Image (cartoon, rainbow, N blue to C red; front, side, top):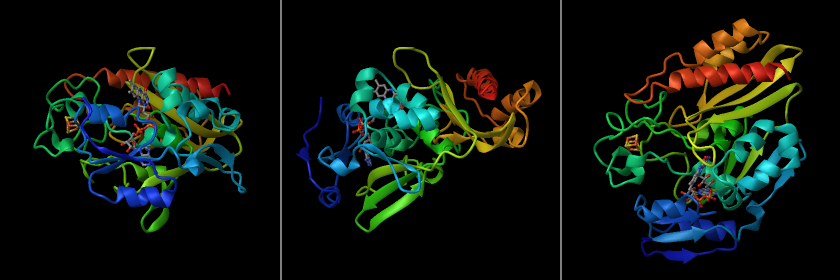
Length: 326
Ligand SMILES: Cc1cc2nc3c(=O)[nH]c(=O)nc-3n(C[C@H](O)[C@H](O)[C@H](O)COP(=O)(O)OP(=O)(O)OC[C@H]3O[C@@H](n4cnc5c(N)ncnc54)[C@H](O)[C@@H]3O)c2cc1C
Ligand code: SF4
């Protein structure tokens, strides 16, 4: 059952920030994640601040320097269907099209997607775990088949649930944030927070701050990109393992780019190990095999998720082989 809360729908970003400054206030965008959190008692909320009337947060457009601007209230379905996104940033369109189900993609927004709460079932259930301010992590020695293999800091073993965030990180995107002190811009690689920094936060956002838009830099010459996700159910499910590739090529040689794993860590996980193996090299069978080894180096599987090691190796091999073909 949903708890009681006040509900407001301000018409300006400034008005929304003001509403968010009161105790226990939280943003409501599409509500696909927030309402589950409220229903499951995950969040203690006094006031829900709908941002649905903030029209300047909607839509996709191009900026004068060639960057792409995606308003935070743009739906996931709009991102997946956008001609410009499909044409220039294939990994983002593919990631958006892999999010949840058609209904959730039509309702859920890209801002909500990168800010969503973790789906660790202890966190969503009646367990007062570390991330909810309790004293222990139940997943570490519990039912941890869907938890992380990297980046837990020995504290919290969630995987970051977003499909679009790894693609945005691979593309070098940044997030524009509005707050009481004005606007700030944070690159995607600094937006999500590791457990050692703050186990109760997923992002750098303060409680009065709103993600206004996401900026994706112009696609560099020779960019090829893709997103691949493996999940239990084809209908809708979170990533067991996924990879966003955004690589620049000159002929068959990789000259730059990023490789980001999903379903791997509490934050979208940039695999510099794979990047180090492939950048400056031709993507042939030997390089690809080395990259697959590098992808899982340093992984720390838990009791029930060791299967993720061969899974990540396999998808890295397949995706690099596919992208090498152009
Ligand atoms: C059954 C199910 C399956 C799902 N499967 C997937 C999946 O496979 N892949 C995936 O990526 N996601 C998945 N999701 C999550 C879904 O994508 C997100 O719920 C959705 O994108 C969130 O968008 P929203 O607009 O509904 O956010 P809301 O539910 O409104 O908000 C989510 C959170 O983000 C905060 N927030 C929202 N907008 C902003 C903003 N502009 N600035 C600051 N904070 C903000 C809210 O306060 C809240 O804490 C699934 C969800 C469900 C229920
Ligand atoms: S992994 Fe994190 S969210 Fe899940 S039980 Fe442990 S502390 Fe809580």
